[in-house]
Amino acid sequence: MSHPVGHMKVLVTSANSRLGKISAAGLRSTHEVTLTDLPQFVDANDGVVANDLDHDKATDSLVADMDAVVFPGIEAHSGDASWLIDHHTRRSYNVLRACVDAGVPHVIYLSTLQLLDDYEERLTVSERWRPLPSTDDEILAIHLGEYVFREYAREEPISTTILRLGFPIVDGDRTSANAGGTAALASDDAGLAISATVEAGGSGYRLLHIQSPVPNARYLLGNAELAIGFPDKKESLAGEGAAR
Image (cartoon, rainbow, N blue to C red):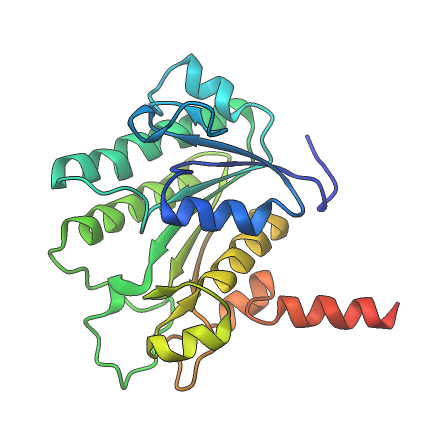
């Protein structure tokens, strides 16, 4: 199953969450996007498919024929500790299992650089550094979710990419992110990185740090530049267009 880069079929889960909407906005202009969310977060006629993401035929049908799936972690939906852990482990496992069975090649998990927030800000931290998750319920659940995605790519014929997104996620463009601090991520940049990751395709297991290139940026972006062309993909594409 393959499509031109300009027309990939992409499923976005937690579609009515903030990050689900950011993901959809970054993908819709180029790709065919299907939106899904848990039934309690779906309103009638909002264009979102209600699905519990259980290990069942409904989830199998949902992922069938997709080229990629985007699974928001951070800024998806809130709940107590048990709900969050269940969502980021059992439900993500169910989605990955369905993708393997359907031959979906690539699943993207949207994690957070808050997993590394306990390192001193003077340190420039790369993907090689060990996470230091806080005791916050959401952060711990996302940390567990990363393990699910990593181990799936190691054990099954599927590629997974974890994008650790900067914080806070600030609405708007890179100029807006400048006021958000040294780890900030503009929502426009989040959408750009997600779209670029989908278009780059899978490569086994991959972990990338994503933040806007603000002054004194806290996290290194070299791996993201090599793998998906972020943060300069937009400028590179503009240059190619001018050259033509």
